[in-house]
Amino acid sequence: MEEVSTAPANATPSMAVARAKRPNLFARLRRSKVAVAGFIALLILVIMAVAAPIISPYEPNAVAPKDALQAPSGSHLFGTDQYGRDVFSRVVYGTRLSLMVGFISVTIAVVIGTLMGLIAGYYGRWTDTIIMRFVDIMLAFPGILLALALVSILGPSLPNLMIAVGISSVPAYARIVRSSVLSARENVYVDAARVVGATDGVIMRRHVLPNVVAPVIVLATLGTASAILWAASLSFLGLGSQPPTPEWGRMLSEGRNYLREQWWIATFPGVAIMVTVLAMNLLGDGLRDTLDPRQQIRT
Amino acid sequence: MGRFLIQRLLSTIPVVLGVSIAVFAMLHLVPGDPIQMMLGEFQTSPEQVEKLKAQLYLDRPLPEQYLRFVTNAAQGDLGYSIRSKRPVMDEIRDNLPSTLVLTLAGLAIAVVIGMTLGIVAAVKQNTWADLAAMIMAMLGVSMPSFWLGLLLIFGFSLKFNWFPATGGGDFKHLVLPAVTLGLGASAIIARLTRSTMLEVLRQEYITTARAKGLRNSVVIIRHALRNAMIPTITILGLQFGQLLAGTVVIETVFGRPGIGRLIVAAILEKDFPLVQGIVLFIALAYVLINLFVDVLYAVLDPRIRLG
Image 1 (tube, each protein chain N blue to C red):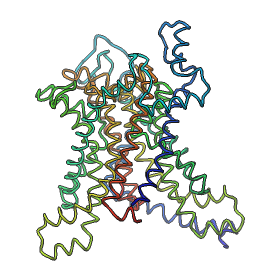
Image 2: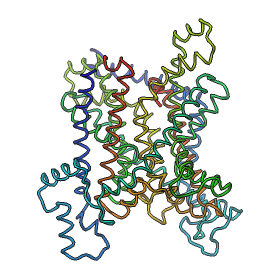
Image 3: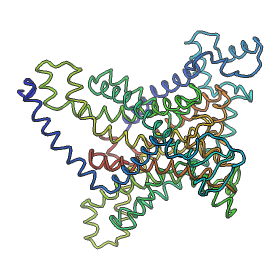
Image 4: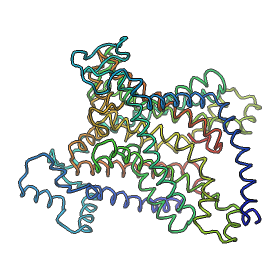
């Protein structure tokens, strides 16, 4: 009771706990070799995305017909495509797009999903029923189908792609947040907070939400990997980014007609997608083992 | 058992209704005028616009539109494709067998490869075999299916000429698409099998079985695997849905006819009735398959229907 009623007494021990935990988390994460590998790969990708104009030797969309379809060489590290564009520069610029698409779609999913799960789990009863029925309906559209349906409504473009992928990922977050809230709600300190007159908003923000953070971080990291994969798939199908955007899925789709002779056009964007998704998955796995051991069984 | 069945059936009804409302709403959620969007660049007379409006019941009040949509759909009438002018149901019927064959073949490959990898990894935990299996599984979940498909085409069609690169029809056309589809899902099954297998191997009845002097292979296959398979069976319904949706990409990569390729073409051509029909069809099929798997699961495992 004292802890809740007097602010300084409440702040000091919890801050001390937070300080004691933090180095521990990083130390544990560092022990996982795969997580470190994923983190370093991701760091390199982020640097590539930020420094794209410095790293790329050419403009990603600069057309040079006389240089078309050149094999990888000193002047064109990854060769050139059918329009003479430098594949290396396009792959580097593509990092920006893929990371952006991944992060923005996951942000959309996290915000909407967390809100839905928090409200459903906290208020329970009919609020819970309505929200979770809605989630069930979303889950009735398997895999990429919901994103496909949303793209068909909104029209194919990069921003619409992010909205579509983001919304289709909402159910996973809503569910995991709801179940964390349901168990957090049972804690004595939630009752204590209610007894001393804390409002629902305060209880949710201060006492329930912190319990939800760990599973959401894990899911969001793994979710970024699948968001990037989905976005690339939709772009590959022509339902995402439009030409001449240097988007990896799109580049692969354009390069597939040249597979026999000019393998490099499709190969390098493919490797780029895989490395990026792999990095996010490795980091996500490491985070899961460290932050949320309960989830280890699930895959 | 009866109570479980009824409860499970009842819980499906709101989902089916919700799916029908969501698919119906698709047309009305299109920004701007849906008729304009569908006809797009085509030169159309006002009569044509009116005709299409009437055909889609867009001139009626919203509740009536929905009722017509649902009653027609329940009778297998999903309207007409705007581009081919054929009934949507005929389009689906023509393309479904090829997609189903691909999905089932993919699922079979996923289960065989996934469970084998998972068992080997669990039995040989912390050895190079475990590491190799889990690296393969990690690569499998991170590999875009369209890229894997292109790599297989490059290797097995263009270089060695063992299998045709594109098209549908006979068994030879099925191999590469099914492998592409199955490998991605096998990674998920491998990881699941490994973790449940590890848990089962720690159980006392396994120790007992070993203490009785049974051969290792008997212990693993007859005592451990049987119990470790349960989570894999439960996700089969989900995996089937994932694979069914995954054919969208695979069929496009391999130029294989099927409903996946049909829906991509329909979206690009803004053929909305066809898109709605396919989305509704896949979602309902998915819901029913999961219902079936759940019931089957309850039949197999008494703890579920009693708990």
